[in-house]
Length: 445
Image 1: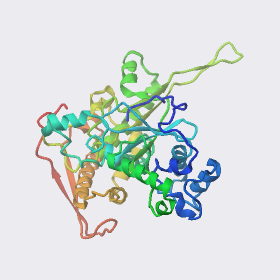
Image 2 (image 1 turned 30 degrees about the vertical axis):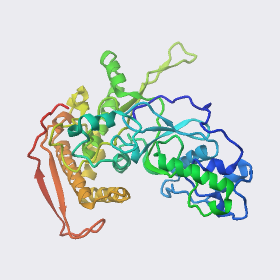
Image 3 (image 1 turned 180 degrees about the vertical axis):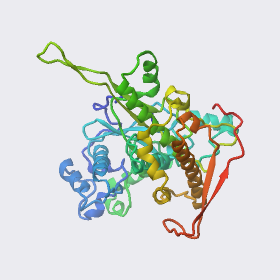
Image 4 (image 1 turned 135 degrees about the vertical axis):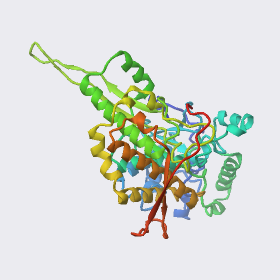
């Protein structure tokens, strides 16, 4: 999701007008039927929004499917989004950018606070609302998809990149987790929408029958929910500006370090889609603090980056067919500078720790196994690629290489040979290292 400007949509008019009927509101969202909590309350009874929805959102009467006990701040944001959709009918807005179903999510005040990417609306998903990938599949099936990636697991890749970012304390990926949301603006098939209409009619005419429905509204969609960042622009915009307007020395040093964090993240997760249009830069030029004296204090410019669009990472093999999917930052002048001591001190101790690397793999296992199409063997291959990337990165940091020299190293996979599964490990675990012998036909794209 490369959008970096907050759209103005606080005055949007919902597609379906409010009728004052509480049941009608529930026909469009994926939450439990209110009739289940009180069989004596008719479904077509008019109830005030404050008292009715307040009871529904209370965790003592309605248990949300989006629970993050380890991160109460993130959980509160998601619950705010649920309230915005259910109570105030502030529906997500489809972004016209990108090649998949990407939705800007708003809070109860109509402010954009997140980006939601449903699993079934990914570039190669069955319900992708964008026609570009459908045309590619129809007209050029031999080039459809990326053979090194697991299809329709981009939402896990987004959340996995955030997990790696947090474990290594890189702090460049906006927090991303897997959530479930429902809204009439999402792309559902005709069957799901017909079911909603039928259940609504039954609820209006036969409430005693409708109270047995497990759900009145549209089914929740699973996907990645990434917190929205404000004030950022595409990296390509600022990089062009920096070519003509040199950064102050202190700011340039900070930007170099942030750039190295991006390199570390992308290399470890083997991001196959990192162009200069899907990572962001926030740059605030220096400002003078005018005082009473004749001179004024000039503050250094502030700069920060955000690594978004991480849905095409974690391949189960290195690219070895048509395309190499290179890191486009490797052509930047910052990539020719050797890794700094600062980045070495930040990540090298963890990358050299076998237990840390295995803990990282275990955490990713807990995340990836939640997918219905999860395959244990494919996941182990993904981790073998990631271990190989970590091995190369560790060696490059020790040898004082630059990012461009890092990407020129031979692709390596490191497989773990063990008897147990999951978090079970022993001193007898061994690792097999292998070097990729096949190179893609095109190395520049």
